[in-house]
Image (cartoon, rainbow, N blue to C red; front, top):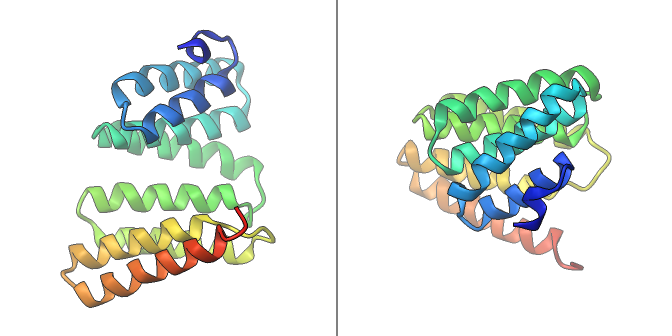
Length: 169
């Protein structure tokens, strides 16, 4: 509650993300939407891009796919304009697009976005734990296509990579 009352959009959106991850989308959506509105009013591309991404996460988790897709597009527009092509944030945007496509039942588009995200992560100089999410999304695409052997392989890959990425955490 305290973070939601602050004037800092960053604090609001981070608080909303924590609520989203806890499954409390009824609380997170209005908070992150308010933070996004503040960012839009500020005109700061970075703030708009990152807050739109967090708003997309909340909207997808709440089952609002149309709003989720709108926010992903807004995030991509603003972050693509200011970040280098190898910035991992653009890989995360691609994974969010994949998530939307998979939720809409479009595994082909989902795979294309996952491939785009992995390409960004490959070009990044940072170790990127979001690769785990990419493998999870690939497993979801495999399940949609009823390729359960591939789904199991990708899920096992996600677990192995997760162990590797977070071993010192």
